[in-house]
Each structure stands twice: as structure tokens, then as C-alpha cells.
Image (cartoon, rainbow, N blue to C red; front, top):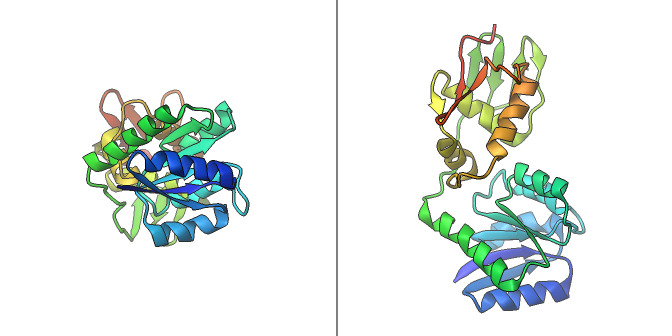
Amino acid sequence: MHRILLVEDEPEIGQLISDWLAKHDMQVVVENRGDLALQRVQEEKPELILLDIMLPGMDGLSLCRKLRQSFHGPIVMLTSLDSDMNQVLALELGANDYILKTTPPNVLVARLRVQLRQLASVTPQQPPKMSGRLQLGTLIIDYNSRDVRLQGQAVALSTSDFELLWQLASHSGQILSRETLFKQLKGREYDGIDRSMDVAISRLRQKLGDNAELPTRIKTIRNKGYLLVADEWS
């Protein structure tokens, strides 16, 4: 039986979802506060997390971002907020899917099963424990302090963007495929549709002074992946 943590503050909805999923080989543990969910993940060790967005203590989007620092299973947003902006933001923050509460129960089960099958089909690869300092010209990256400097100026990056930059920089001169980056950074396979890695690459280019139209520092190699060019950081 699959173990799922549902973070939902409305008891009636939480009970309905729990009862329905229990009929489909899914054991659901419910937490009604966002700020207590991190501890529940440590205690319950779920395979998949279902998150509402509107939660007391901590909203679901902020919680998704924090969970992605240590949880490598599927995170699925289950919400009544039918908003393209929230959906894009959730996917950028590391959610695997975004499902409306009005979705028919059978469709909800089917989509959760897709995520669980993908989880079972690969051995999750946690981001390697790394340390040290990289310097490529005027680009300096310190893994221990999470500090990035370009031409002596500090560059503020989110945790996920820092990990992406570290992967690219530590393999400078090599093409890293989307499949490789998804496995290393998200602990899952690339589904051929998710564009969150492209969005993150775009953010890195902007923050690192690369040309968005004709990038020279972080290149997209068509049908292959991304390449950080070592000698373009003078």
C-alpha cells in the first residue's frame, strides 16, 4: 500500500480524499497545518505528498519550496485555485503536478498512480553531498556557504537554482541532458513535457549576465541538453 501525506486544512475534504484513496491501495495521513508538515514528512516518510495551497501556518507554495530541499518523491498540488500563475509557480518550485479539487476522483487516482509509477521506475538519486569551491574566470561558487560571485558581485540564487548552477559548473565543458539534470536535482525522470528546467536555465542566464537571445555562457545544445562554457566568465 502506498503511503501518502495529505496537507489539507478542511477536515471534511481531507476525510473524503482519504476514504477514496484508501479504496485504491493508498494509505493517507492528513496534516492540517502547513508549518507542521515538514515534521510530519520526517515522521511518516510518505512516498507522495498532496498539498493544498491555502493552509494555516505556511502556504502550500512556500511549503513546496522547502520540501524540495530534502524530499525527492512526487509533490502534487491539490487545490481549488484555478490559476495559471499559481500552476506555473508551483511547477517552478518543484511540484510534479497541479490538480484541481473539482477533478473527478477516478482521474485524481489515475494521475497519482502515474506519479507513483514514475517513482517506482527509477532509483531516486538524491543530490550528491558536495562541498568545495569552483572558480571559472570571475565566476566563483562556494558550495559550503552557498555563495555565488560574478566579477566580485554577489549573485542571489534560490536553493534549486544554486544546485543547478553547481551541477553545470562542476561539469563545465560537458553537455548535461535534461534527463540527467532531472534525475540529479529532482530525483525523477524527465517526462518530455516539464519545462521547469528551461525556466530555471533562463533565470540563471539573466542573473549571470548571459545574453538571453544568443547565450554564450550557458548554451542550449539542441536535442542534447545544456552546456556551461568554462572560458566565457572573464
